[in-house]
Length: 155
Image (cartoon, rainbow, N blue to C red; front, side, top):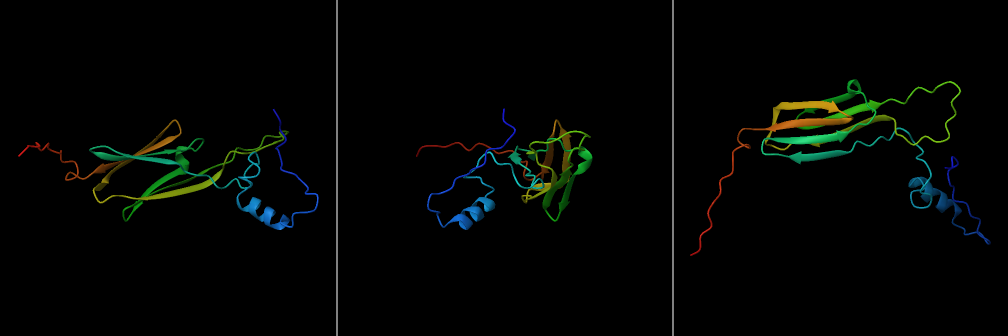
């Protein structure tokens, strides 16, 4: 296992003339295409990934929040917009410990979703279990009506 990250390094024999462009491109994309093992340059860009599903009676939103404490998560509803926000705090550095690489994300996150017209804003619940936030949004009684089967006939 290597603790030293791979860095792209090359020196063209005659100079490419695109050095500034290459540095700009690499900087914009964090070396995503040219140096896959380079760590991210920022530790505050925590992404909140969500799954949104639907049952007959409710909409269900699940979001992965590994390492985020329940007290650091906020779920709000304002004018039909459901917002999940919070912060993942960095671990306190221990005395005498030297880090060779830090790739886990820390910082604040925020994600908003528009609720559909048949969502019951009075029937929303949220809980965290094993690092997964689950939000259940009930549907209005009209939306919960059961479908009936219509027989298809031949003429």
